[in-house]
Length: 252
Length: 252
Image (cartoon, rainbow over all chains, first blue to last red; front, side, top):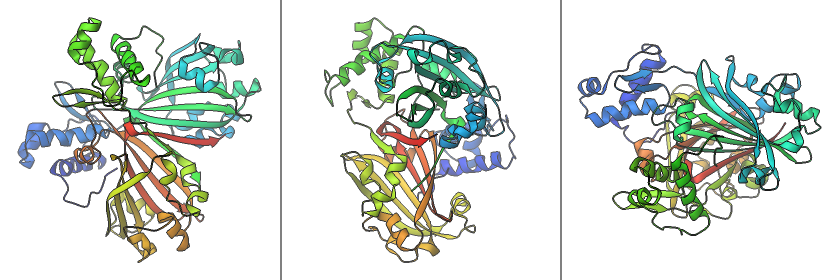
């Protein structure tokens, strides 16, 4: 999304605009090598720092990726549009669809690195879920991939005394996922709060999400509450920022 | 927000946890100098890269800031909580409050660098607002500060033929701001869509927001629509990610 700044456009942005146009118009195909710093210096008569800035801009936007010692390549990964409300609507998971399936347009998610364990609740989880310090929680960790690209790490925490030995503690939670099972337990989620921050990734997040340099993560912490406002799940999601557009629709 | 990873915690995170605890518990006060790389290497018996990573972690979280050639300092800026819906509720701007005032807890925003101009709509603005290519738009740019710290750049685009010579084209739009004026023009916003991405800042954004190294920006593009779903404003906001928590509440 360009930012109009009313003044003269810096040269590095003009170069980035040219390259972006070539990518979007398919003059440069997916996986194609972009002109290097030397090429851009010669073509535009600019300093190396300016050429580098132009390439960095495209990397930051997620439409190019740097391969160490090789160059910068076009990466035409269409970002996923994650709808806040629609995705969680009862309609969707009520008919046996996992919430994530509805989320990825026509591209399916796959999961790997799924683990389920009972652990003592971290301090912030206990606080948000209204549990005693160190109370046992069911912790579900998984990684989401789209087109073989890891896009999200997610960790759900649910009160152990609530989920008992229900399928929520199984690797495969069955049709409709966690929320359908919570409904069966009489703790149907009715309200959601999502808190969003962005930051640079920790080294282990960079590795798990295969993030290129200069790619922040978006952290979404979603709390699901029953109609009686009892918190029943905290889900901490760490997203590759270049892979996602978040969308929220609401009325005045 | 910590990420539990189930395995052994990397040493840099343990160091970061110790330092964070000292900051949060007020053992280290606002503006205090954190131990340097050499101090941490000696105290924890770790390599320089590990010490640096621990400090970077705190900088990324926005609770410390690096001063070139001097060191890393505690920065106790409490992030702003930006509520999606509440902030925009009719109730608030209907009684003559600008949307931003309700947003900053008990801390007031100030504005600077306000400019208003009529310009040809950028392509993406024309598309979203349903205007002809290059149609004239009223462009309102401003910077928001809290406690003298710049936290957000915002650029609003409104169809010029809609706003005419109303106070929307003045630097001070009057009580209730743009939305109250749109209501007077018979184009009261009724629906909102917010799209959110995160990326590293462009150099001019780093400068305008006085961002430290390794601090991403969050970009929110909000479209305001009338009850008849006519888009009347596109507002592109660029936020210092370390200064904000975004919150959205919704029902299943």
